[in-house]
Amino acid sequence: MSLTTQFYTMMAMIGMGSWLGAALDTYGRFLKRPTRAHWVVFINDLLFWLFQGLIIFYTLLLVNEGELRFYVFIALLCGYAAYQSILKEWYNKGLEVFIQFIIGTYRFLAKAFHLFIIRPIMAIFQAILVLLLGIYNFVLILLNMILKIVLVLLKIVFTPVKWIGLLIWNFVPKKIKRFCEKYFYKLAGFFQHAQNIKHIIYKLWKKIKKS
Image 1 (cartoon, rainbow, N blue to C red):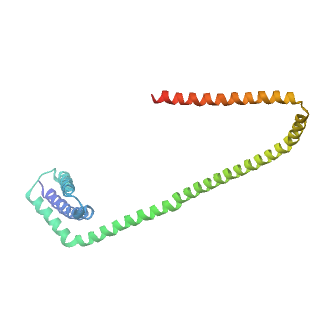
Image 2 (image 1 turned 90 degrees about the vertical axis):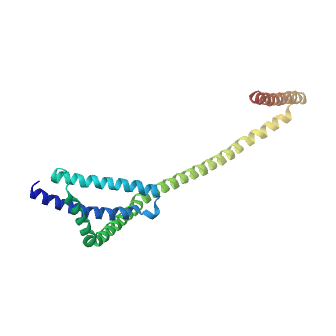
């Protein structure tokens, strides 16, 4: 391995050490260990370190074709120590500002979406609903008025007919009246009998269905 390659390897591993420190702080900020179950923390830790190991190895593979030397670990420790002593405070402040910026942007977009999309749609829907209810009530009132007018007209039309019929009925001979009344009562009795038969058939059908 040439000196240039060794130098690049040292610089890359120092950078990866600083990256590892920043990744640990970021991971701890989002994980919130006290509120997580132990098995969740264990799985997340395992995946985190596996991912970091793959990133470091891939970087080493790009720099010196994956050749592992003792100074690689020293460079990682130096980079991590440099991050802890110089960059940690600044990085955490920047991370917090970035997180709050993302949260604020999300809240702003959510409020804007609700204000400019959801509320107009709801207002249009309510207006359509009020319009439909108004049309429905208007139609009901109109039909009610028409029905009352029709009933009044029918009453006006059939009242003279009723009077004429009663007048004619008074001049009908008593024998014909009795004859008509006799068959009228028979017809009423027939309909009553048919109603009773219908009721009996309905009861029988219910018993058949239950059985």
